[in-house]
Amino acid sequence: MKIKSQKDFFSGLMFTAVGGAFAWGATNYTIGEGARMGPGYFPLMLGILLAILGAFIMFEALVVETPDGEKIGKWAWKPLGFIIGANLLFGVLLGGLPSIGVPAMGMIVAIYGLTIVASLAGDRFNLKEVLILATILAIGSYLAFVVLLKLQFPVWPSFIAG
Image (cartoon, rainbow, N blue to C red; front, top):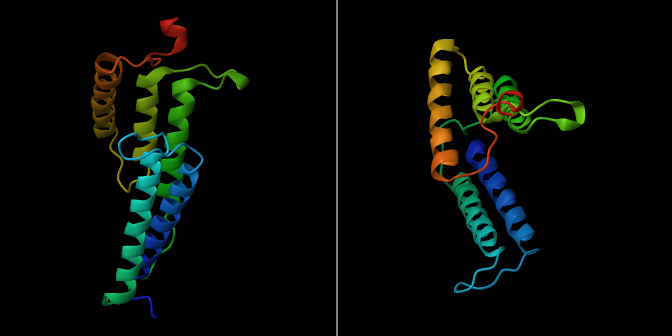
């Protein structure tokens, strides 16, 4: 059988693999049943649904004809690097790295760092727009997590907040 859409086939393969891994990992926890769900119930069901979705997408990629076969392009290394780097920077800024003496900078600084670095992944960079977006995200995150949910996050740098 010929693959008629490479993008869909390999996307479905990825969904199936990730879903299978989640379902398999969930078996290490107590599953329970529908009426009394254990901690492994939700990840098991989610993994099974993701694997079924992936299998359906793979099947469709083998059956439905596409004009050019939807070939997979080259890896976009620049966006991939900036997005992964932005997430790592967010974690380091939020919690710090005590083992090497980097203090926690808090949620506000971490969100600004994440937004600025992630925006470098695109083709166009406008610092004014990025700072406006970061401000909106910082205010929204503060209101959602600290004010409404009352989660204990370091909001400001540790050397300022004490």
